[in-house]
Amino acid sequence: MDILISGNEKVIETLHALQRKKVSAYFFKPSQFNYYQPTKNNWLVYNTLYNTLARLTNSEYEKLLGKKFCGKDLTKKFFSEGLLVEKDLNELKLYERWAKMQRKIDKPYLSFNITTTLKCNARCYYCYEKGVRHHDLSQLQTDLLIKFIKSHLREKDMLAITAFGGEPLLNIKAFDDLTESLSSSGINFSSYIITNGSLITKKLVTEKFKRWNVHDVQITLDGTAETYEKRKAYVNQRAGIFNRILKKISIVANAGITVHIRLNIDRENMTEIFDLIELLEKNFGDVPEISWYPAFLTEVGNDLTEQEKISFIKNLFSNLKNPTKINAAYRMHSMPKSIPCMRNDPKSITVDVFGNIYTCEHLVGNKNKSVGSLDNFDSKLNSSRIEYNLRSECKRCVFLPKCMGGCAVNLETDDEPCMIEKYIIQGYLAFLAEQ
Image (cartoon, rainbow, N blue to C red; front, side, top):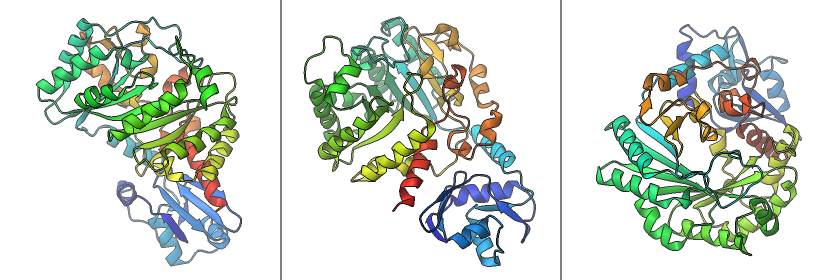
């Protein structure tokens, strides 16, 4: 057995300890969280709970499955990496218990996702904010937000701020006022900006971004020049905006700020994404601050099937000159998830331009989906977010530890709830199988 990634010892030891009984020496079964990928001559086995990745011979694979006698030494190795577990163990129940314990740990951070504006200078056809009234975060709401943050932030907490919209850079004043107040109060914070990048300038980066403590920026690309400009459909669009966006990405990276390029993908542009990546590698292949990742669009009428997504990811890794740019290791996560996303994190709060508070950024502008407001918020209601029920199909899914139930908002709208990790892992292992 060749261990490519050793399992997370902390998780394995903790879950073993939760069993509260002596481990039997001879009665084991394969973990329900083992994902098996055949190769030309052997097998890859990845455990989504313990984060073990191993390459097995055909004989070792059959021994793991109990089809052949497995000796003491190999059994012990399988068990230590989490590929084998006790035969009578309810692994799902144990994982759910561990996740519940993790959710109750008091974590020293507070995350605010702030809608500085619902206005946008682009008209992306897939935008989930269609129909939402365009409005800026006013001075009154900014003042209430500052007061709210200061009243909820504890001395030991690190404050993380995400600015999004609309296009957040259409309302710079709100972010200026917020960060200036935080800085003058001696509050440590970092900022993350989700932007289309069109309004970024060198002056903005060197002056504003520095004062805003911007560590990361996300910019979306949908294809090469013609496709990008068509899909973004910028208001009063000038020719050549795609190439200007690439220059703006360089400006941000040259300032030492990490840039995550989100590649929005559907059936219409999936082939062209490979041309885009070739262009990105040519321009940014040796820039450590810049990476890119795939994001499959859903509910747009031309969604990819599950198998198409897996094949796309596999081909993506096959065509990359530097596969680390996709950062598959990050997507595989050493620690299993205890919550799916900010929706179930009581330390994560989303605020829209009207001062309404939400559990998820996808709900902003829809007051009926809010859980309170900046001047009327029940913290007990917020704390209850850690308790939720998994769907039966999620409990049976081998990828549960990587998503913990997926996107609740998508589920409510009959959209696909599964997270990108599900496809990254399968596509990456299919890629490794051919190496």
